[in-house]
Image 1 (tube, rainbow, N blue to C red):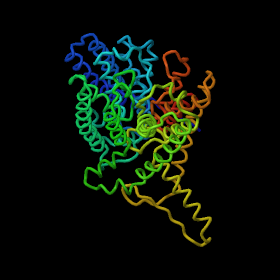
Image 2 (image 1 turned 120 degrees about the vertical axis):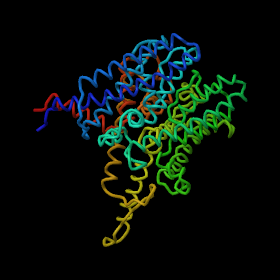
Image 3 (image 1 turned 180 degrees about the horizontal axis):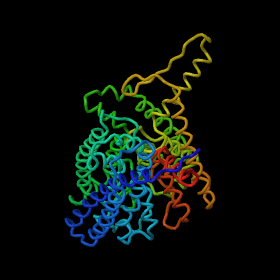
Image 4 (image 1 turned 45 degrees about the horizontal axis):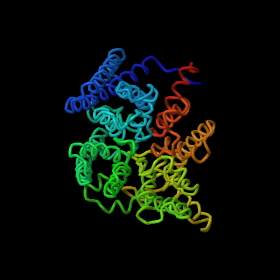
Length: 500
């Protein structure tokens, strides 16, 4: 028998959702300050309206739903899944007010794309968007990469036992430090240190390429936030192609790879344990899958002679591959070139790369390297059982910060999430095919949305059907949260309707 949720459940969910909304509201103060500094008063006013609406909604929920009770697992998961939807709606308000988005749905699309670190865009006339709104686009990507709940746990929500439920619900099932609040703050420490270093490196590179210092460092900060948080937004419509710089591309590759690594691995590297990067199952699996998928892409591109020189193959082929594999979505080619200059084999290679993703507890989406490594270890274990004598005891283990013995529950969990992603990729492709796109191009765009990548072959545009926009929004949301909190809210809605 399904039990109907109690009023107390709704109050607890509403109360903690209100806290997270207030945390999000305060982040809008950053573009307001930037707008005042840049002399962009009207854009700053857009965010002032956004922060007013957010604060009002947050305080209203805190007042109506006030409670002293803590979250249970179900409530924590629901708060997380609702937080991302509400963040999309509130984050879209100042974007829509700018006049650069055709509809509020388009603004919501870009807001979800930003928070989910996807990078698909529906913005109009991006090259003339204000500094203030451009900063917000990249800031929400930076916030979303760390996690909306991580923001709340770091700065706005004091320690409570329900914090772990929210942390796990945001697809972060690994604690770096014993306390999840301290873990959240370490994630921010890593991000801010890299932000400073990355902005300086990209800013100096931009100056050497002829950009004005202020503009160069602004672009450097925006590009870093999009690269480290494996997003893919850029201040210019041509994306990374705008810079025409090999140095810029190499630096962004390094930042993308750093963003695709587990924050737990970052912690051990910071503590001086550099051998971990070579021993860890995630980094070794990432290396193997990059080599494998690029081999497919390289063979495909070489076969048709699209990029005859090695340096061109690196900048046009490998760059798209590493951008897709890390879930970033930066492009050094125009979207239509995927269908014009790339053959089917090369496209399959990059679709595979996008579908796999980076490490768990990183800023990437998709299936993740730990799950791929576990599935491979399980396959290896079963193969040993077939080959070895019946009485032999087969034990498989892997190194992930420490030696871990492979258990059936790990394999089951990895297979379930992997299957869920494959189904999500396929469903989005079916919707794309329904609207007249070829199977491969529809699968490319669907995988990019569901895996939170952001590479596009041209399907994502202002004129695409509303149903396709909504499909990609749902895919970005579900893919970023890795399903469990999404499944929980679906079960909760069913319980409201059918519960007794």
